[in-house]
Image (cartoon, rainbow, N blue to C red; front, side, top):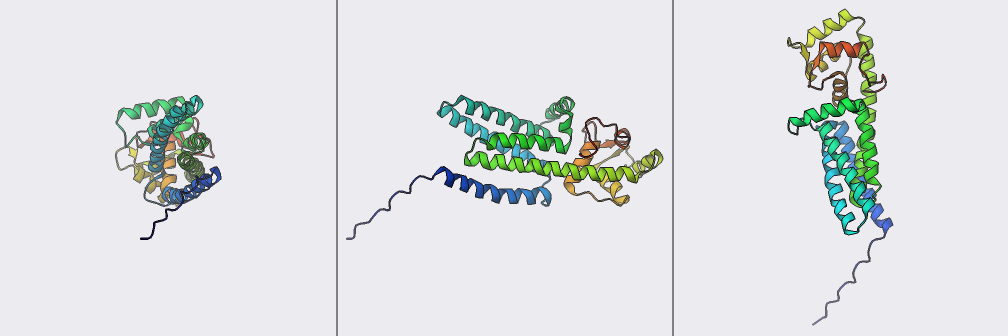
Length: 249
């Protein structure tokens, strides 16, 4: 009978090896996120909401690690990341969460107007993601890196949407044309839905991508009720929306 020779145990991985593995996982996931956010069926809002959920889950796991190691700073940073993840879920997930969340979202928009716009939320994503990334574990590098990437995509989407909104404004020469175009596409209910808005910009020879449409529509929809009133539309056309720089939406 031949004696079975057991293979020696694998040596523990060095920090460089773990970092390389995290980098490969992040690169693979990032490519999927970019495709999903820019071309896939899920809008950027949904991907961002799921990113917020991932931040909450990862930070809770990480907090237990901080408790185990009695690392107070680690626990505090995990708590901040968890709060940022919750904030992102509230900002991006009103349609997935209970109705009372909408009132919290409105209060956040009132206190921090830049969060109404895609570019502003992109800045938040990037900051929160970089905070999580700094914990430098595989899970935090992946989730934090994804949120930083979503932040950059959001800022870019907001910029493109704002450029196209500027084109839309230039395509409407006066207030009579503004009212005429609004009335022609408001489905006879006095409001523009997202589909009505797409129809209006299409009639003027403009084309917005799905995420650009979401960013542009949200920038004009002042009360965040999912529809644009004529008053909203007129305030946008006159450039009276506070916190909406011409370059971004």
